[in-house]
Length: 388
Image (cartoon, rainbow, N blue to C red; front, side):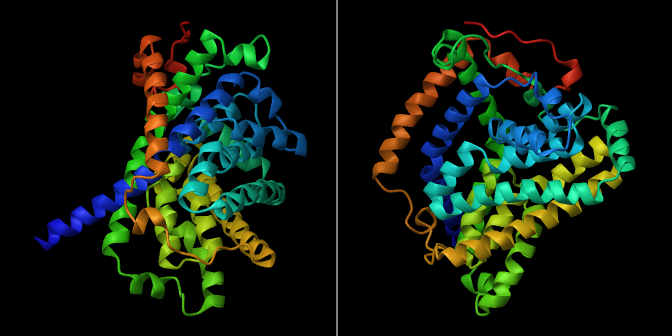
């Protein structure tokens, strides 16, 4: 009976966190769908063909306008790299598409507070700068050629079909495209496809977070994160955060509930931020890097990304502490208070109606066959035309 109660408590905590972030998820993916519907992938490779500030700025902007799915970001980065983008620009695109997207910021604000959303965006920009500097100092032409040769072999990863689908609408003004039938269809397709690409990670993140919150005692977290030694905790946090992420197997926005549990457990502010950054070096994605670029380049990406993520965590910790805006409250309402009838529940109902409208539009405009192509290799995909 005690085991059943423990499982029930973990599942209830998981559902409580899901209920807390449901409307922000729907809002975030809707806004992301609007942006993606108006930004074409076609010119990406040509625009990102250099390592200079201009190309890296565009790589960052393209990343912000893309899906938050880590697997799709990695697949699309390989695609634009093969088509002519520089390796540095492709990696910057990855970092931006998983750390600077709209839905991530909204969820962080609702679940953990505006300080974490601000830290994520500041840290995301810092990572772009850091990786550009590190690559300029350490990335050799030989390593780039090794990556290019392996990438051109077309090894299969995950979500390649989703990454290759360019359903953006061109021609006319911003609002004419957005409010056209074709624009509505494109938004609905991006909305459903993005949900389909990350729901496993969201579910896994919620289940793991619920289990950790319900089963792991505070004493363990306090000892693990050195909460009785504040200075050591600040040193340890950004180093340990990415390591925990690597073995969590959770990426995209699914790692935010886990971050909430770690913050409640006592990890430093910089440690939380570096943990969220590290969704691009979890074990399944490292295996995809191995397939895409080879063992040596995979190792290079792992080391440089880890250093970049830890460094960004340290800088964010120092900066936010100097500004006096690191939150002192570690109480996460979704973890400790459960589901309540409040504005969150009302907003969830409203946004579930919006989601239903978009899903119906998706189904009525030939969306179901697209779901079957999400893991299809890019070169095997037939051109998909949107219907009105």
